[in-house]
Image (spheres, rainbow, N blue to C red):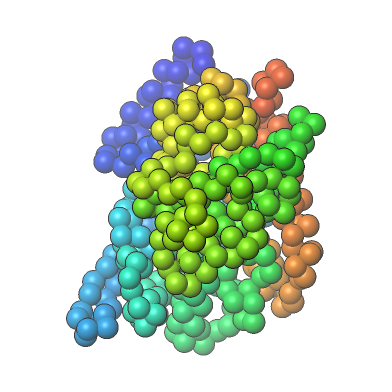
Length: 449
Ligand code: GLU
C-alpha cells in the first residue's frame, strides 16, 4: 500500500478505535475491510465525499434488552438480548441470532458489519444485522430453551418484521429455537409472515436451508479449484467444528469425492485418516443434534485418535475448512497449514482466521476464500426462503441446490473481478470490494440519511 493510503488507514482506524473502545473483534473485522477499501476509495472519490466507510462502520441502531425467564427449578433468571441493525441500504436487515454464554456486543458488532457485506455479495436484496443473547444453551432442558426463546421474542418482536428485519439462526440457534421464536412472534402479532428464516418445512421453511452454509462453502472451494483446472475429487480436507456448518461441509466434501479427516468441538478434535463417510457423519449428527454429546465419542466408537484441547491445523491436508468459530487460526497455525501442503482455505465460520493468519495466507498467495464470501450460502438460501414466503410457494430441493450453486459461482466470479492482481486472485480483496460497492452505491443514491 502506498504511504498516503497507509496513513489514511492508520488515521481511520485510530478514529474508529476511539469511537469503539474495548471492541477488538469489531476492530479486527473493520481493519480487514478498510485495508482494501481505503485504496479503492482513493480511486473512486465519490465514496469518500459521501463518507461511506465512516457511515458503514457505524450500525444504524442497536437494541439491547433484558430477558427474564424461569428455569426448571422455578428460579428467576436474567440474560441480555441484542439486535444490531447494521445497515439496510439494499434490503431489510437480515442476519442470524447467536446464543452463547460469552456473547458480547463486540462480537455482535463485528458479525453485523460482516453480514452487511456478505449479504451484498449474495446478489439478493438483504441488509445486514446480527443479534442473540448471552444465554448458554449447554445443559438446558427442552422446556428451558422454549421458555427462553419465547421471552426473548416477546421483546424482540417490536423491532422486527418481514420488511424491517428478518432474523435467522447462528451458533446455538437452530431450527428448534427458530421454531419456538416463530411461534411466539405469531402469538404476539397474530400474523403468519416470513419474519424468521430457517423455519420448519411445514410452516414456511426452505429446502436446503440447514445444509446451505456448508454446501455453499464447498461450492466456493470447488470454484476456486476449478479455475486452476483442479477439483475436490481426491483431496484431503481438514474441517473444524461439528455443528451445522461443519456437518454439511463434511457431507458435501464426501459427495464431491474429497475426504474430510477431522472434526472438532470445544473439547478437542478427532482425526480419522480413512475419512468421515456418510455413516460416520450420521453418527456425528445424532451426537451433536440429538444427544448433544462430545466429539471424543466419535473417537471411542470408530477407534481413531482424539486430541484433547487441540485444534486440527497441524494435520497435513490439501484443503482447510475452518467451520467452528471466530479467531480459531493464529499466524502460527496458518504457517503450519501451509508448510504441511495446504493449497486453499474456505471459511465456513465467521472470521475464523486472525489478522496474523490472513497475512500468512497473503504472503504465501494460497487460495483463500474469506468468510463473507465462503459462508454466504446460508444467508443466500435464507434470502430464497424469504422469496418463497412472499410468493407463498415452495421450491424443490434440487431447484434450491442449483440456485445455491449459481449464487456461489457468482460470488466467486465477483471476487475474481475485483481481486485479480496479475496472475494471483486476492479473494479477500475481491470480496471486500464487491460487497462494498453495491451497498455504497445504494447509500450514495439514497442521500445522506
Ligand atoms: N448466521 C448465518 C450467517 O452468519 C445466516 C444468517 C441468515 O440466514 O440470516 O450468515
